[in-house]
Length: 319
Image (cartoon, rainbow, N blue to C red):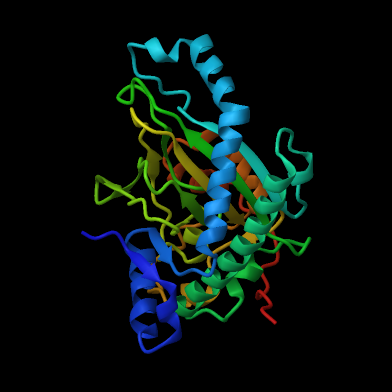
């Protein structure tokens, strides 16, 4: 059972069909895959990593140690189920950036993260079109599905560090969950591992690879594809040695985007199969997700079915 690794350079030559098939299989059977030669320069990724780790050491490490001491986490004897062993901050890129307002970031780091976000946004949209191609949807369909009336997706980054943990059997780096949004692009530490996904009832390591971008699919892609592609439960296992860096960027629908299964995919299903996914406004989904993140996703879908949004579902214009 080999974790899917996609070399994007192969999309430009004789191996395109085989590479597209590999992406399709990853989306259908894993919900995760790792990208190599994705167009973001290795030297630039090295800069992102260097500045992120320096910022953690300078501005966040001591704060994390003080939090651990104040809560007595390093001496706990029982499993902790209501918090995670992580140090994080969030950046918002779209619809409006807040990078200028985040305290403690030096000018070089702000500039680099802004450029990184622009490159990841481009990569996310390229991937959405590859998914459209594999699904038989019109090019641009998924991107347009994510645009609300504001004409923009929601795009942000969670910058995390997972310090060495003295009790990894009692506290998770990040508890198991599926991601609420659309498509997630992760630049992770290539030396300290910890990310795992649930496949066929077993936890499988997502291998750290230098200069790769890990992709996973969120709940909204599952809804739009009518379950053809699924969001997959994943977690971070805390490690006793080394601090793991994780920069996860979430390309999500706009807050007022209406999400529902693509009609073209419904038509291809057997007629007797009832539609199992509701239609809803993304912001309403996020309100439910906020309280149920670390629970199964099915109750979230059920809760939204009970309050199905009464909206006109015209075709999504892709021009």
